[in-house]
Length: 454
Image 1 (cartoon, rainbow, N blue to C red):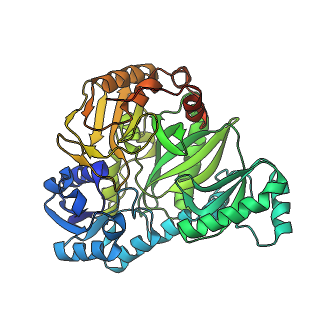
Image 2 (image 1 turned 120 degrees about the vertical axis):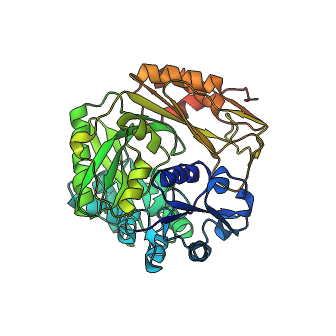
């Protein structure tokens, strides 16, 4: 269906996409901002084009510029990566209307699953367990809202229908605080997401964050590729991911995975995607679906041996899945540490020039990064600069290998979160596994570290 792929992203994911495209014999086009002219994928692409200034709104979020770049370079497909426009139904629709292939689900699927109210309703109808809460967006009548709050039970959480990334949420523990929380979340949601609708859910006190990776084609075939535990979080942002999820029965995982496959078929989903769940007291509760490739997809690649980005491109090319559920076997254990250009204590961004970068290596180690000596980390974008992955026969071996990789790495010139991850690999709660999504926040509050990484 296409032979030239435009990569509408930057950093390590753009490099990852380029490598998968090259593996399939596709020509590649790298579009970039003025700040990113020296990125590795830009140098490696068959064609490159600057689409605007450093500000994302004028470059990576500029839909007309991206479509114009596709026309100028002869690209007939666009891969959005993650972030930026990856989950924009309007962008996917614009790509489709331009007669190009959007490497991802159809715009209708993105729109359905991007609104948390409609997504929850679709999952409920497909038999996927959901967090108890309001049946839809909250009404305007205060008495009705209070009644729904009482039916839901306290504590509860007010969520924006179009929210994401930890924004647009407020926990409410007492009925007298509900109306104010709803009003504030509506206002925030309208400003941030262009959609003021909010809804209620029961607030789970000590859940884990478990996600199921899926892959589906346009012919009604779908498989799930195991699960990831993403409970190590700070301010709703994932820090460490691993697979398989420790301490959860494989039968329970298989049952929820099968539900996710059924849901893909029910909504005619196409491409890669991730179902995200809260897990508490032996129960899974759907919270959202990410309709794109995930930052943490390499974790699943290591334990399944499946090249997820390559499979994503094959689906976009119109090929049916060659994988069947019986082909999917999890082997060993994998852990991913997200390395950000941030102070490891204050988490303040630390853009600047990388004076020295030496990547770790060895058995079971994978490093996804766009770093190189002399690279200048810009202040305009997400601070992720590398992903360290360790795979072993057991979780214990994966942790040991990750400790070695973190100690072996050299990243000089900027501060990074390598030092934080070194602490976490020895933290008793992490080593023991089974922690909830609040564990890291408690650890950071109880054991502040005065040192800074050199």
